[in-house]
Every structure is written in C-alpha cells, then in structure tokens.
Length: 104
Image (tube, rainbow, N blue to C red; front, side):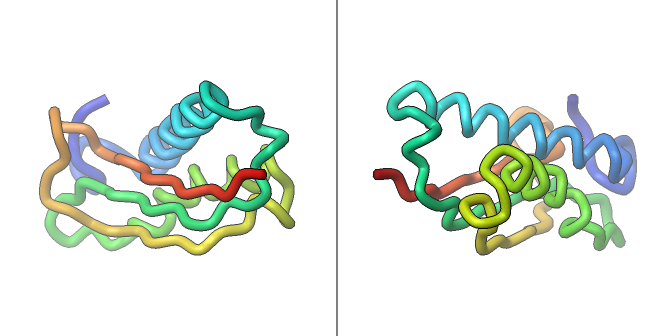
C-alpha cells in the first residue's frame, strides 16, 4: 500500500495498515523471545503520512493499539502512545509503527 491518508488512503485502510505494522512488530519480537514473556507494552508510536488538512492520525493508529490489546489483554497490552502526522514516509508507505515492550 502506498499513498497518504486523507488522499489515496482511507482511515479504515490506514487502520488495517497500522494493524499489519503491529503484527510485523510482534513477529520481530517473537523471533527473539516468546510472546508469553512480554510483561508490558510500554509505548507505541504511529507515523501517518498525511495529506494537507488530514487530522485523524489517532484514529488511524487505533488499528495497532486495538490489536495489541486483543493479543495481550488490557493489563499487558495497554500502552502509552503517540500518533504523528508526517509529510512523507519511506517508499511512499502510508503508515509506520514503532513499538517498545518490556520482557521477562
């Protein structure tokens, strides 16, 4: 998927994109530790490539936040978060996610 939210990409498509990003983060974590060893999701930062006037970045990043709470439950999956609108992301990506977790 390429494009900007508020132009070529809808909020719903962006939510699916951040959900996919969060799944990729979980796969990276699972490659080095068991996901059962995650004690807490500490922080999620979502970057949203935004067309001029687009202001629904928090709604887009909800896709990732909701996934983390589904996977880990509200106690472990609840996290601090930032949703940042940017002019461009690498290779035309509409969203990007950065995740910090604590492990046993």
